[in-house]
Image (cartoon, rainbow, N blue to C red; front, side, top):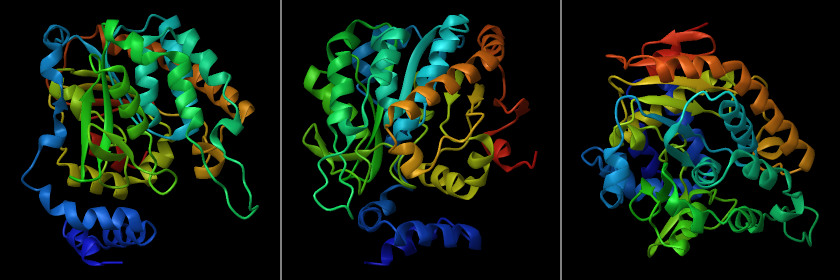
Length: 356
């Protein structure tokens, strides 16, 4: 492996030994990531195009309707854990907590965002609870190997027919995927994309490196929008750039696990050039229970797991619905404000840094 990729990444770390060790560890364990980092990281310092939304000009009417009172929902990536987001959405809809003006997601969050824009919550719930583990695994000729299939993702897209229904949606839908050629995450407003481009964008956003091959989309190769360190697994910036100032962010890690990833998150935000969200109000929703690791969570499409995870999302959504409604009805804030785990924080950094 060419270790110059690690050297380039570490220039962002300064004197922080913890960050240096983390970056080295991540790249040592992901050769594919390292090869892409090697050719792309040096482009980031002066280029902020990855913070903007592609195709926004084509939806001028919907974009112009965005105002300081508009609420956007942001969905993190996390594979099968995404069932949790559908449960939260169902609860918030039942409680009439707010009307969604725009949705932004990465990986499974992109897929769920498309479902939210195109379907009713009961339809999305039926699709998720009808998934089978064999939809995501191919025949295994050698017991020592696990081979993953994308048939399950294609099934969700085809069963929901989001590609033919999203064009009529009044909700802006942004899909984040990672361009393997440029090394930047891209945020695509897909409302008026062709059926084929919508399918390709959703498959691209969920092409987990190493697990799946890249996905060709608009003549380029793409990976999961939450590509390690370089991607945007919780894409807030595209909605902020469209004018959204009230956010509901549905994470797929517990609050404590999220805080334990502080170093990685801070490094990722530094690489992406994300800093402050002036005048933005956030309600962050974290699972009240752990959703598992890579094998027991992200890649676990067992029917019972999906059902239980969706139910947990529903319970957590009911509990926080009043707080979401309060944020939606409240006057716009002048400075940045984040609500998480029962407390308010003045910034994203403070939220993950304070010992509480």
